[in-house]
View 1 (cartoon, rainbow, N blue to C red):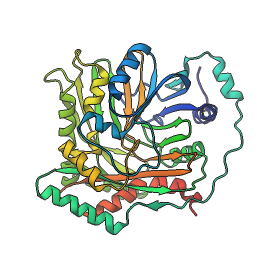
View 2 (spheres, rainbow, N blue to C red; view 1 turned 90 degrees about the vertical axis):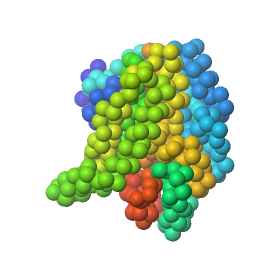
View 3 (cartoon, rainbow, N blue to C red; view 1 turned 60 degrees about the vertical axis):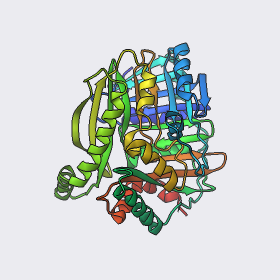
View 4 (cartoon, one colour; view 1 turned 30 degrees about the vertical axis):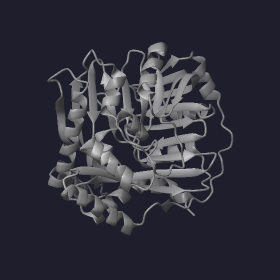
Length: 420
């Protein structure tokens, strides 16, 4: 079925989906993407599901997929690092997202090239969506956004991390900070719709797991599988956009030729190459694009594309595990960077800098990186978003803080009218 007004359909479909306990939407916002197969996917209701703590979560997921061999949507939280490596998590967590949650949906709707397809369920779903009228939206209250650390403490911490770089412990570390609001009364779907308008991105999505919500405007792909090809597209390198066309073009050019940003990007590309090697047919890991510059509403990003052929002896879920957590959110060397993240950050990451996405019955998949995202726990009314950046020897702590604020700007703008 062709749709005349795609935005209106997506909005209505999400309102309908939000009435269920669990739903997950994946939206490309019409960004051109040579590896994307769907413009929009909406998975609704639970046929089967698993909800696990780290320990043997990846093996359980493999088993679950082996039994189901069906469409699955799910979340892999950052703390699964403790299963992949000998690590732990001790920082405070006010959101308590599952470490691993996957579900086989009752209903699945896709939009491909402007055409709506009902993949799970029957065509009457489209009538249900068309006729659906949502209840009154939940009233918003003023949100008081707080930070876990002051600008001064952020700068001091970055300088301490640079001491580790000088000592040779690491080359680069992704250091993040949390912004949060307590007693935040919001309508998550309404906020997500606004966030998408302020910041449309290719890997955005809305994920509801009962009283927990991920409202994501992610620009980054973690890992994708098409046939026997694996694709990872790490982002490292950020510059603000300008409304002045000439200045904007200059900013883009400067980012493209910025030696510091290139150094950050290439370190992570090397790390991703190494991660993919664990799952690849020997000699097939290729950097298809290095230092590509892509424009989004608020920022330009430097994105590289690394691919390989998946070794047929390796299960695709092991390939996900071999690359997890994504190098762009850890640093290099990876294990030491994750140890320092745990020691120096002030909040547990949880779902933030993890991933959500889908697996098809054929074993293809696509997963984003949970960044530029609002996490919300509706029972406790706790709202959180984190931002971070790559710290290297060449980093300027004040400039890194400003970059964090730039990355947070779309979320701040979205929440602005609700800030007290």
